[in-house]
Length: 266
Image 1 (tube, rainbow, N blue to C red):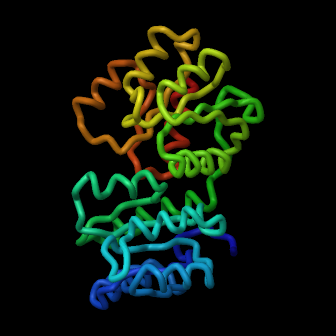
Image 2 (cartoon, helix red, strand yellow; image 1 turned 45 degrees about the vertical axis):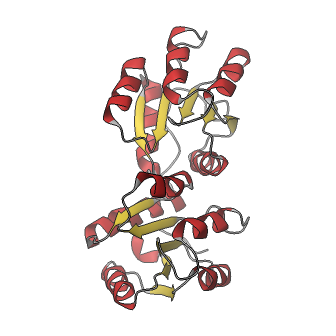
Protein backbone atom coordinates (compact mmCIF):
# COMPACT_ATOMS: atom_id res chain seq x y z
CA UNK A 1 0.00 0.00 0.00
CA UNK A 2 1.31 3.43 -0.91
CA UNK A 3 1.99 6.13 1.68
CA UNK A 4 -1.13 7.90 2.94
CA UNK A 5 -0.30 11.48 3.86
CA UNK A 6 -3.70 13.07 3.21
CA UNK A 7 -7.33 12.21 2.49
CA UNK A 8 -6.66 12.61 -1.25
CA UNK A 9 -4.23 9.66 -1.10
CA UNK A 10 -6.94 7.22 0.01
CA UNK A 11 -8.28 4.51 -2.27
CA UNK A 12 -11.93 3.65 -1.62
CA UNK A 13 -14.24 0.72 -2.15
CA UNK A 14 -17.79 2.07 -1.87
CA UNK A 15 -20.51 -0.49 -1.12
CA UNK A 16 -23.89 1.05 -1.94
CA UNK A 17 -26.91 -0.55 -3.69
CA UNK A 18 -28.56 2.79 -4.52
CA UNK A 19 -27.19 4.42 -7.67
CA UNK A 20 -28.39 7.82 -6.44
CA UNK A 21 -26.69 7.48 -3.06
CA UNK A 22 -23.53 6.07 -4.68
CA UNK A 23 -23.33 9.13 -6.97
CA UNK A 24 -23.72 11.47 -3.97
CA UNK A 25 -20.91 9.77 -2.04
CA UNK A 26 -18.67 9.62 -5.11
CA UNK A 27 -19.27 13.33 -5.74
CA UNK A 28 -18.24 14.18 -2.17
CA UNK A 29 -15.17 11.93 -2.40
CA UNK A 30 -14.02 13.54 -5.64
CA UNK A 31 -14.54 17.00 -4.13
CA UNK A 32 -12.14 15.90 -1.38
CA UNK A 33 -9.55 14.99 -3.99
CA UNK A 34 -10.04 11.22 -3.97
CA UNK A 35 -9.77 9.77 -7.47
CA UNK A 36 -9.37 6.06 -6.74
CA UNK A 37 -12.97 4.96 -6.11
CA UNK A 38 -14.47 1.58 -6.98
CA UNK A 39 -18.03 0.54 -6.22
CA UNK A 40 -20.00 -2.60 -5.46
CA UNK A 41 -23.73 -2.98 -4.94
CA UNK A 42 -23.68 -5.95 -2.56
CA UNK A 43 -21.65 -7.67 0.12
CA UNK A 44 -20.34 -10.65 -1.85
CA UNK A 45 -19.12 -8.63 -4.85
CA UNK A 46 -17.71 -6.09 -2.39
CA UNK A 47 -15.63 -8.72 -0.57
CA UNK A 48 -14.29 -10.01 -3.90
CA UNK A 49 -13.43 -6.46 -4.97
CA UNK A 50 -11.82 -5.62 -1.60
CA UNK A 51 -9.62 -8.72 -1.78
CA UNK A 52 -8.64 -7.88 -5.34
CA UNK A 53 -7.81 -4.18 -5.09
CA UNK A 54 -6.91 -3.91 -1.35
CA UNK A 55 -8.24 -0.36 -0.82
CA UNK A 56 -7.20 1.87 2.05
CA UNK A 57 -10.81 2.19 3.29
CA UNK A 58 -14.23 0.57 2.79
CA UNK A 59 -17.30 2.82 2.94
CA UNK A 60 -20.57 0.90 3.14
CA UNK A 61 -24.31 1.27 3.55
CA UNK A 62 -25.99 -0.79 6.28
CA UNK A 63 -28.60 -2.62 4.21
CA UNK A 64 -27.34 -4.43 1.12
CA UNK A 65 -29.23 -6.78 -1.25
CA UNK A 66 -27.44 -9.92 -0.05
CA UNK A 67 -26.25 -9.01 3.46
CA UNK A 68 -25.76 -6.08 5.85
CA UNK A 69 -22.92 -3.69 6.54
CA UNK A 70 -22.54 -5.42 9.90
CA UNK A 71 -22.02 -8.82 8.30
CA UNK A 72 -19.66 -7.28 5.75
CA UNK A 73 -17.36 -5.73 8.35
CA UNK A 74 -17.34 -8.92 10.43
CA UNK A 75 -16.45 -10.94 7.32
CA UNK A 76 -13.56 -8.52 6.83
CA UNK A 77 -12.48 -8.87 10.46
CA UNK A 78 -12.49 -12.68 10.09
CA UNK A 79 -10.09 -12.48 7.12
CA UNK A 80 -6.40 -12.06 8.16
CA UNK A 81 -5.75 -9.99 5.02
CA UNK A 82 -8.63 -7.60 5.73
CA UNK A 83 -9.04 -7.63 9.52
CA UNK A 84 -7.41 -4.23 10.14
CA UNK A 85 -8.83 -2.51 7.05
CA UNK A 86 -10.60 0.77 7.97
CA UNK A 87 -14.40 0.64 7.69
CA UNK A 88 -16.86 3.56 7.57
CA UNK A 89 -20.63 3.00 7.78
CA UNK A 90 -23.14 5.38 6.19
CA UNK A 91 -26.67 4.70 7.40
CA UNK A 92 -29.95 6.27 8.46
CA UNK A 93 -30.16 3.54 11.11
CA UNK A 94 -30.27 4.97 14.63
CA UNK A 95 -31.28 2.00 16.81
CA UNK A 96 -28.46 1.38 19.32
CA UNK A 97 -28.90 -2.39 19.24
CA UNK A 98 -28.37 -2.38 15.47
CA UNK A 99 -25.38 -0.04 15.51
CA UNK A 100 -23.68 -1.63 18.53
CA UNK A 101 -22.04 -4.50 16.55
CA UNK A 102 -20.61 -1.91 14.12
CA UNK A 103 -19.21 0.11 17.04
CA UNK A 104 -17.66 -3.06 18.49
CA UNK A 105 -16.13 -4.05 15.13
CA UNK A 106 -13.51 -1.32 15.20
CA UNK A 107 -15.28 0.86 12.64
CA UNK A 108 -13.54 4.20 12.14
CA UNK A 109 -16.78 6.18 11.83
CA UNK A 110 -20.55 5.93 11.55
CA UNK A 111 -22.07 8.65 9.36
CA UNK A 112 -25.80 9.46 9.29
CA UNK A 113 -27.95 9.80 6.20
CA UNK A 114 -28.05 12.50 5.04
CA UNK A 115 -24.51 13.64 5.82
CA UNK A 116 -22.39 16.57 4.77
CA UNK A 117 -19.11 16.69 2.91
CA UNK A 118 -17.54 18.09 6.08
CA UNK A 119 -18.71 15.07 8.10
CA UNK A 120 -17.25 12.75 5.47
CA UNK A 121 -13.96 14.67 5.57
CA UNK A 122 -13.81 14.26 9.38
CA UNK A 123 -14.41 10.51 9.04
CA UNK A 124 -11.72 10.14 6.39
CA UNK A 125 -9.21 12.17 8.41
CA UNK A 126 -9.72 9.60 11.19
CA UNK A 127 -8.92 6.91 8.61
CA UNK A 128 -5.69 8.71 7.68
CA UNK A 129 -4.77 9.00 11.38
CA UNK A 130 -5.36 5.26 11.73
CA UNK A 131 -3.26 4.34 8.70
CA UNK A 132 -0.43 6.81 9.25
CA UNK A 133 -0.35 7.85 12.94
CA UNK A 134 1.40 11.08 13.85
CA UNK A 135 4.32 9.92 15.96
CA UNK A 136 4.45 7.89 19.13
CA UNK A 137 2.83 8.52 22.47
CA UNK A 138 4.50 11.11 24.65
CA UNK A 139 4.12 9.75 28.17
CA UNK A 140 6.27 9.79 31.34
CA UNK A 141 7.12 6.09 30.90
CA UNK A 142 9.48 4.32 28.53
CA UNK A 143 7.24 3.04 25.72
CA UNK A 144 9.13 -0.25 25.50
CA UNK A 145 8.28 -1.02 29.11
CA UNK A 146 4.76 0.49 29.15
CA UNK A 147 2.21 -2.20 30.01
CA UNK A 148 -1.43 -1.76 29.01
CA UNK A 149 -4.43 -3.81 30.13
CA UNK A 150 -7.27 -3.85 27.56
CA UNK A 151 -10.65 -4.92 28.96
CA UNK A 152 -13.46 -5.58 26.46
CA UNK A 153 -15.81 -8.50 25.85
CA UNK A 154 -15.42 -8.07 22.07
CA UNK A 155 -12.25 -9.80 20.75
CA UNK A 156 -12.56 -7.75 17.56
CA UNK A 157 -12.69 -4.50 19.52
CA UNK A 158 -9.68 -5.54 21.64
CA UNK A 159 -7.66 -6.37 18.52
CA UNK A 160 -8.57 -3.06 16.85
CA UNK A 161 -7.64 -1.04 19.94
CA UNK A 162 -4.41 -2.98 20.36
CA UNK A 163 -3.50 -2.30 16.72
CA UNK A 164 -3.97 1.44 17.24
CA UNK A 165 -1.81 1.42 20.37
CA UNK A 166 0.88 -0.62 18.61
CA UNK A 167 0.95 2.06 15.91
CA UNK A 168 1.73 4.56 18.68
CA UNK A 169 4.70 2.61 20.00
CA UNK A 170 3.20 0.40 22.75
CA UNK A 171 4.43 -3.20 22.75
CA UNK A 172 3.26 -4.86 25.99
CA UNK A 173 -0.39 -5.81 26.41
CA UNK A 174 -2.59 -7.83 28.72
CA UNK A 175 -6.20 -8.58 27.78
CA UNK A 176 -9.38 -9.40 29.68
CA UNK A 177 -12.91 -10.02 28.41
CA UNK A 178 -14.64 -8.52 31.46
CA UNK A 179 -13.98 -6.70 34.71
CA UNK A 180 -13.74 -9.91 36.73
CA UNK A 181 -10.84 -11.16 34.58
CA UNK A 182 -9.25 -7.72 34.79
CA UNK A 183 -9.38 -7.78 38.61
CA UNK A 184 -7.52 -11.12 38.63
CA UNK A 185 -4.82 -9.71 36.33
CA UNK A 186 -4.47 -6.51 38.37
CA UNK A 187 -4.03 -8.60 41.51
CA UNK A 188 -0.89 -10.20 40.07
CA UNK A 189 0.59 -7.78 37.55
CA UNK A 190 1.44 -4.10 37.70
CA UNK A 191 0.20 -2.11 34.70
CA UNK A 192 0.72 1.48 33.56
CA UNK A 193 -2.67 2.01 31.92
CA UNK A 194 -6.11 0.36 31.80
CA UNK A 195 -8.37 0.74 28.75
CA UNK A 196 -11.83 -0.64 29.40
CA UNK A 197 -15.26 -0.91 27.80
CA UNK A 198 -18.41 -0.11 29.81
CA UNK A 199 -20.90 -2.84 28.90
CA UNK A 200 -19.43 -6.27 29.74
CA UNK A 201 -20.73 -9.48 31.35
CA UNK A 202 -19.70 -10.62 34.84
CA UNK A 203 -18.42 -7.18 35.88
CA UNK A 204 -18.95 -3.99 33.87
CA UNK A 205 -16.63 -1.02 33.38
CA UNK A 206 -18.14 1.06 36.18
CA UNK A 207 -17.68 -1.75 38.72
CA UNK A 208 -14.11 -2.24 37.48
CA UNK A 209 -13.27 1.45 37.93
CA UNK A 210 -14.78 1.38 41.43
CA UNK A 211 -12.72 -1.69 42.32
CA UNK A 212 -9.50 -0.15 41.02
CA UNK A 213 -9.99 3.12 42.87
CA UNK A 214 -11.27 1.63 46.15
CA UNK A 215 -9.73 -1.85 46.55
CA UNK A 216 -6.83 -2.39 44.17
CA UNK A 217 -3.19 -1.96 45.19
CA UNK A 218 -2.94 -0.08 41.88
CA UNK A 219 -5.54 2.53 42.86
CA UNK A 220 -3.81 5.39 41.03
CA UNK A 221 -3.37 3.69 37.63
CA UNK A 222 -4.86 5.80 34.79
CA UNK A 223 -8.11 4.28 33.46
CA UNK A 224 -9.47 5.27 30.05
CA UNK A 225 -12.96 4.08 29.14
CA UNK A 226 -13.54 3.54 25.41
CA UNK A 227 -17.24 2.84 25.06
CA UNK A 228 -20.36 3.01 22.93
CA UNK A 229 -22.46 3.65 26.04
CA UNK A 230 -24.57 6.78 25.52
CA UNK A 231 -26.60 6.91 28.75
CA UNK A 232 -25.42 10.16 30.32
CA UNK A 233 -26.35 9.21 33.88
CA UNK A 234 -24.34 5.98 33.59
CA UNK A 235 -21.36 7.86 32.17
CA UNK A 236 -21.64 10.45 34.93
CA UNK A 237 -21.54 7.63 37.48
CA UNK A 238 -18.38 6.28 35.84
CA UNK A 239 -16.76 9.72 36.05
CA UNK A 240 -17.72 9.92 39.71
CA UNK A 241 -16.19 6.47 40.26
CA UNK A 242 -12.84 7.90 39.20
CA UNK A 243 -12.27 7.13 35.53
CA UNK A 244 -9.43 9.22 34.07
CA UNK A 245 -11.15 9.86 30.72
CA UNK A 246 -14.01 8.60 28.53
CA UNK A 247 -13.89 8.19 24.75
CA UNK A 248 -16.74 7.23 22.41
CA UNK A 249 -16.78 4.29 20.01
CA UNK A 250 -16.13 4.73 17.14
CA UNK A 251 -13.11 6.89 17.93
CA UNK A 252 -10.27 8.41 16.00
CA UNK A 253 -6.74 7.41 16.99
CA UNK A 254 -5.65 11.02 17.52
CA UNK A 255 -8.33 11.46 20.21
CA UNK A 256 -7.31 8.28 22.02
CA UNK A 257 -3.65 9.32 21.85
CA UNK A 258 -4.44 12.72 23.39
CA UNK A 259 -6.60 11.24 26.16
CA UNK A 260 -3.94 8.69 27.08
CA UNK A 261 -1.24 11.34 27.21
CA UNK A 262 -3.34 13.64 29.41
CA UNK A 263 -4.34 10.77 31.70
CA UNK A 264 -0.79 9.51 32.15
CA UNK A 265 0.71 12.92 32.78
CA UNK A 266 -1.99 13.40 35.42
